[in-house]
Image (cartoon, rainbow, N blue to C red; front, side, top):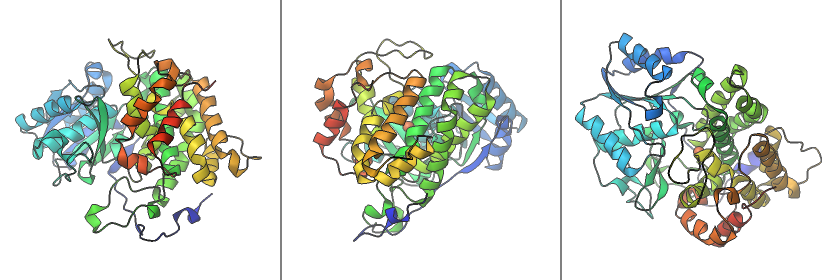
Length: 436
Ligand SMILES: [Fe+2]
């Protein structure tokens, strides 16, 4: 299934890729190891970050018991914002700095892990918040150096943040999310206890499952690393470096697993085989995109979550304003994106569809986009996902504003296998309004 031709050398293109990974511990019950893991990293006084919904959870109690047993003094921060913002991350950084901690534990979904990564940076290297973000919105400075050790403990099966050096943060003034990327914010340890997902309701499993699905397929269909420009010196190699053999390996397996288990995992919380498998697939997809970057579905998703007019997903706490969970905002664009990008890499799109258990026996290269889109739509229907952007209150007439907002995600847009102008992005949004 390999596709070495995809990585053929190009004039002036990169000739190498770098893989960054934390130590990974995976299994049912491994939250009991978090204390020993933290201790082994030299942590004696830990900031423990979680969100208000997990404050009274069994997962937090288990983590705290393990940390106590290891003799680690803990300061608890339960004010993680779902969809962290510059302001909420700065508050988490202030907590770390004021508490004289020598390490951090995160327990929660992507919001909690991303908050912790940002907190460690701004506690140690204070700067105006946009400094470490890429242009055009940020100052483009690199995170100056290592941060205190972070043991990341995901409780959902989608984000993969436990194994990436990426943190997604909302800029409140711009009402859009941007990515902070640095190898220095890679957690030291990832402790993935799949039993934490037993308590997740259906729509949370569906949304996070589509997040992981899209991570994997975006990595697999991303621009080849050899098509990005060669870097001037080794430290300049970005984490969003394009598809490469490492990301391929993990993306294919993640797609195979999510194609097989997504519906089962959503339908039945007691199906441990399915939920464990989705947890593992989420981590695999993180290992992939943390070392390749995602592309259009993610780049376009931030505009959708910002501009959506109405949506209150079942199984999530109600809010005063529209709220589109991350995985849903991503997958609403995906079928339209892959219909558009397939012509740039048809073999890769067909391989991805095959991993997702689509029937590709009679498919020709020109069918690739439709085959991928068809399989994703089939899974969306089967798991109760909204039918396109119309279901979150967006129409054709919103496409120009959506496209203008999305174009600020410059690196992720550039990671698309097909070159993109703003008009292309607008067309993708127009074709994502209704799918069935
Ligand atoms: Fe994501």
